[in-house]
Length: 361
Ligand SMILES: Cc1ncc(COP(=O)(O)O)c(C=O)c1O
Image 1: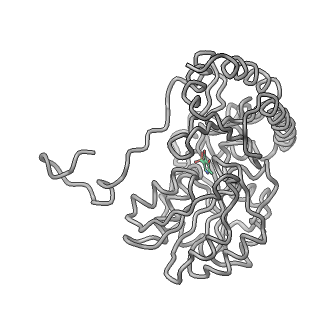
Image 2: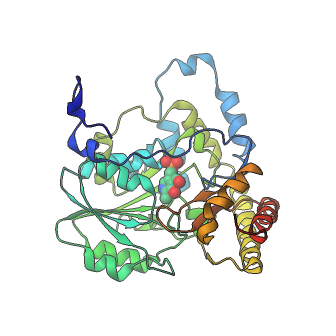
C-alpha cells in the first residue's frame, strides 16, 4: 500500500496504513449458482418483496427512516425489550459500532482464526492490539481451553462467530458462559449469523451477563444480504452506549420494511432451514463417496479439503456457472461451499465429481 507521506494530501492514520487490503468479490455473481457467500440460494420470501412494494410510496422515500414500528415488531419476535437491541446496517455495522464504542488504539482484542474477516478489519481500523487464536488443527474445533488461557485482565473485546465461518465449528452455551465469566471486563460478541442452522443461541443470556453482545443478521437464511440489515443485542445500558456511537439513520427505510416482513414469514425460514439440513447430509455423503475429507458443519456451508486442486476446482466450477470459495490463503487446500437445496447440491456434486476424477492439471 502507498504510504501517505509520498505525495500531497492528508496522511491516513498509521493504523489504516498498516492494514492489508481486503477485496471480497463484489461483481459477476448474479446469474450463477452462488455457493460462495453463504447466502440463501433461493432468495428472500416473496412476502418481503410484496410488503416493500405495497409500502413504497413516493412520500415515504422523502422522509428519513423511522424505526419505531420495526423496533416494536423485532423486539416481540426476538423476545427482548425494545431497548435491548439496535437495528444495524448488517452485522458489519454491528461489529463496527461495538468496536467504536469499546475499543481505543492499542487495546487488547482476541479474535479466532480462521474466522469472519470483518472482525480483524474493524479492529485494525481502530488500531487495536489484536491477538489471534487458531481453531484446533485438524478438527477445526473451537479452542475453548486456549481462549480461556489467553484472556487477560486488560482484554477489552473477544469476537466469536457461532457457528464459525468458514470452519462450521460451534461452541455450546456452557463454553460461552465460561468465557463470559473469565472476561468480565471485556465485551464478548457472539455473532449468530448462522444461528438458524445450529439452533444454539446466547440471546437469552443478555441480562445475566453484562459483557455479552449477540448479533443476528437478515443476510443469510432470510435471503436479504442486499438490504444490509441486522441486529445487535445486549443489556439496555450497553445498547444505549452503542446507540450513542451509531449513526442515527444507518439503516435505510426499505431494509426496515424488509425486516418487518421477513419475521412474519417464519414458515419460509423453517422450510428453508429444513431443506438446507437435508442438503448438508447429501453433501456429506457425496464427499465421502469421492473420498474428499470435509469438516462437519453447524452452518449452511461446508469446508472440504481439495489439497493442491483447490484453485483448479474453484475455477472449473466457475466455468460451469457454480461459485465456491477457495480458502487456501488461511487453510491451505480448503474450499468452502455454501449449502443450498438438495437439487443444487446434486448439481454441485456432479460437477465436482467430473473435476475430481479427471487427471490433475
Ligand atoms: C460470521 C459472519 N458474521 C457476519 C456476516 C455478515 O453479515 P451481514 O451481511 O449482516 O453484515 C457474515 C457474512 O459472511 C459472517 O460469515
